[in-house]
Amino acid sequence: MNVPFLDLKTQRAAIMDEVRSALDEVMESCAFAGGPFTETFEQEFAVYCGTSHAVGCGSGTEALWIAMLAYGIGPGDEVITVPHTFIATAEAISFTGATPVFVDVLPDTYNMDPALIEKAITPKTKAIIPVHLYGLMADMQQILEVARAHELFVIEDASQAHGAEYQGNRAGSMGDVGCFSFYPGKNLGAYGEAGAVTTSDTDIDARMRAIRDHGQSAKHTHTHIGWNSRMDGFQAQVLRVKLKHLDAWTDARRAHAAAYTEALTNVPGLVIPTEPDGLKHVYHIYAVHTDARDERMKALADSGIGSAIHYPTPAHLQPAYAELGLGPGSFPVAESLAARELSIPMFPELTGDQRAAVIAGLGG
Ligand SMILES: *Cc1c(COP(=O)(O)O)cnc(C)c1O
Image (cartoon, rainbow, N blue to C red; front, side, top):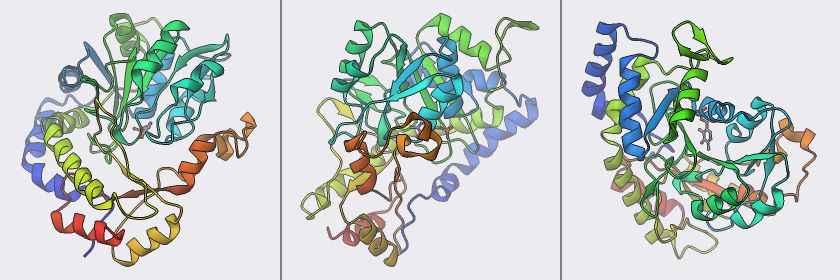
């Protein structure tokens, strides 16, 4: 049996008619860049996340960048984040002119270790960016406590965590702002590039709206130096259709995860993901960890099963960050996870037979 790592086609087929008519509305109105469809999506997504506002933009990377610009973060500032993430988290910090300062992650949740934050704070620190990796929220309560004590902003990188919850609070609603990616493979994915920032701070919302639209506070009044990062009408309409299905898709992901977890718990040499009490994991990625990653990946491939690695090299060991001078051994947990992580097929439309094949391929 062939099991792809990710299958976007089955889902697209299931919602094709809805998507086509939603896209027809954009063509009829010609509201292509920003405009009413984007505004409606922004309102619906804010409600979904439990915030007052959402600002649509060009990508998740730009969402992070725009949020930091709105807080005035730039050259000379430091922003604390984790090395065990997609490069965009660190890259967005660097692109403001600020410096990323990494802290290691926890070996069980793979998310920021709150106990390490305080030591990383300097007079230059402006913000903390926890990443809700794989769909599990970071320990927001502890992170917020440290942030409040030091008057730092908290910018959630919720790019992998649409609909995830921490004690009933959705991703994007606990920090000062939450940044989302709608890259096609994300749990809520556009048919192209898109992102958004959620917030309940009206001033920051206004500043981010201006930044993503040439710094305009009113038509022809450019109050800030901004940029063009408007969300387009087609993406907004695709996202509006998909948002209605998101909770059902999350339930399907969680059911697949529960089946994987039950079948793989006792497989020797395999570490499976955990979901701490009070948290709701949305399983963007179902990550297992094993010392025999290459062998297991090859065995899966030999049985026609796709897999992937998220991420083989932590940010601090990327050539782009050589200038930080952080060699191997700087963040032992992140480095160990990077050497052992293996992502197995996870998407809502996975069939029972496909799931069984993956489990069998891993010796479960
Ligand atoms: C996908 C992702 C991003 C970047 O989003 P894009 O829309 O691809 O720019 C940032 N952070 C994390 C954790 C991501 O997974």
